[in-house]
Length: 422
Ligand code: NDP
Image (tube, rainbow, N blue to C red):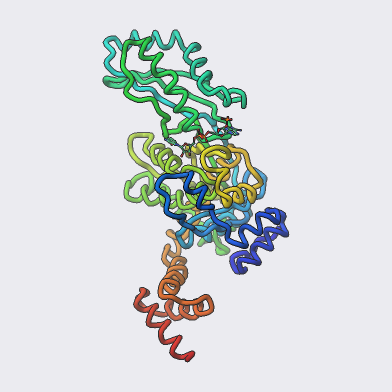
């Protein structure tokens, strides 16, 4: 499979390439070709007070090599440069044997918070003595997940200020598990009140999914950073420094992590998952030490002449449940990826986050981020000014020569172009 030049192709040529590589069947190709959207009657079932639907670009970042498998990764994003940067990084990292990932666990956590308990230590012991009974109650509340091989696995109790908090870990299999866990938490809340004499404040899933951690790593041969050896070493050193800066400075950490989520959110959205949950988990994890830090690290190993990158994140991603089965384009995203399991999809997404971070740091510590952005920004301005497809290239090339690129200039360029034609 050769994906070089994919970005230069027309949309129909790209679809042809998907056909040639058997990534999609004819039905799905037709849906993309005809730009088939989420049907209104289904949208009306998914959320409330629906008026219509909102479309976003559905793109492909090809050439990811993850745990020895090839993936062409669907991206949904409105931000220029994101898909291009990820594809660029994927190509470089592929040459250095790709990404290796580790799934540390795949369970969700729910919590019941009790208050108004006189002797919290005693209450804690009573609950722990009844652990097996409470786990059974939770499982009885959602028998279908037990049938699928999942279910409640562990129960812990913590005292925090005035609260007695009961944490339940649940194997939710291919689902993200919010509704599954919420059902279980509500089922054990009243029995917990009865056992302790306390009162339930709430019973709900926690989005801090520390039992769903995934690590992606890569090791980039310096040859692929730059052809010039001195330049490559300098770049590797600077990328290590950039990762240290994101550990030291909150202002940088926030932007560093936003860059990681540029890629992550794009795949999370494409695969129909709850991106708020993934963002909430990731940002809470960035603050696990009590101070918010960059999520990835890069280390330059002088002796081995490699740059090592690593990213660990909670990735409670699903391939079933929620609205995944409802949106036709989401189904196409899963098909392009070869219908991965939830764990496999989590590995893909964390690898994409690391790739996105690599591309951003490489650009920032060398040419700067704007050089790559300018052309895409010019394209957006040309479109905003009303350029037709055949006029875009001319408007973009003239805009790039201007000192200040803005909508006013784009409109003037387009106007003079049209006048010249008439
Ligand atoms: P669902 O309520 O859709 O439950 C999962 C569904 O997937 C079940 O109907 C289950 O069927 C089905 N399923 C089919 N195959 C499998 C399989 N192999 N493994 C697991 N389930 C399977 O979704 P979740 O419980 O995952 O909840 C996710 C939704 O909840 C998202 O839409 C999210 O936005 C939302 N949400 C998020 C919250 C948060 O993040 N804090 C809070 C509340 C809601 P069966 O029942 O037959 O087993």
